[in-house]
Amino acid sequence: MNDAAGTLLLPGTLCGAELWSGVSLPRGTHVLKTVRGASLSQAAELTLSGAPERFHLVGFSLGALVAFEVLRRAPQRIARLTLIAANPHAPSSAQLKTWAEQERAVMDGGFGELVRTLIPAGPQGPTVLDMALRVGPEAFLEQLQLLRSRPDSRSTLAKYGGPLTVLVGENDPVTPPHLAGEMKALAPQAQVRVIPDAGHYLPLDAPQFISDALKEPAYA
Image 1 (cartoon, rainbow, N blue to C red):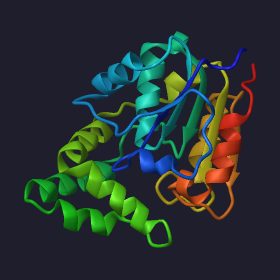
Image 2 (image 1 turned 180 degrees about the vertical axis):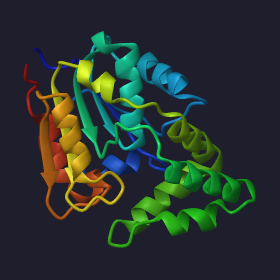
Image 3 (image 1 turned 90 degrees about the vertical axis):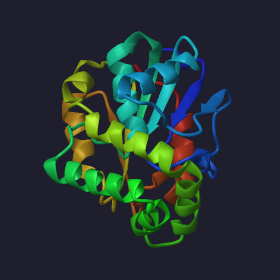
């Protein structure tokens, strides 16, 4: 399979383009500023509207959920798929409860206070907080709806036979490595990499690893 004509990066919840600031990106890469949309369908359509006819789609966390929706709608447009910190399952009851509580906090005017409780400890914390505050409450409410409405994407992934890379941090508490193993079982062609000593925000924790992965040639 030929390399994609371009690469499109989709960030995660409360993330912006700064997520990729340390990553050396291939020529022709387009970075979506923030994931927006009243529904996953709309988010996928917005993604497709700004993409080449065929392209390398890279989704991080929430961006991976949008990537699954793009895969459902237009699999012929995806020349290569990279999933970073991805979860192919539908939401759990615990997740739905948490997101409902977060929505109420934002609606009550507590966005700034809430996001400070969500920021991971460690050197990446200030960058993640800055991104979150830039994204803002309006976009975050949309993103919560996207998270709540996501379907189970395992059957979608099982139907995909194209080039697939799955990346996850060894210490990721949000999308732990066992999920990458599940995706490998569904799509045996997947190249799975578990990055040592990295957490959920993989492009910030291991930018050189992401740089190398994105530059690797596509495989059949």
